[in-house]
Length: 82
Image (cartoon, rainbow, N blue to C red):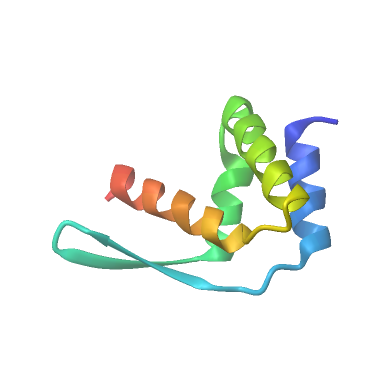
C-alpha cells in the first residue's frame, strides 16, 4: 500500500478530534489546526509521507497519542516557514 493511501485511510478511520496547536517561534505565537497539519502531510513529498506513515504505524501499534506527533510536525512546519 502506498504511503499516501495508508495516510488517507489512517486519518479517515481514526476520526481524530480537531485540535489547535500553539507554537512559539521567535517572539510570535502561532496557532495551527490539526486538520491543516493533516492537509500538509497529504501534500508532502512521497518520501516524507512514507516516513510519517512509519511513525504513525508505531504510534498506533503502541496506542500512542497521534496529536502529540501532529503537534511536533506543526512545530517543525511553523519553524521552517514563518
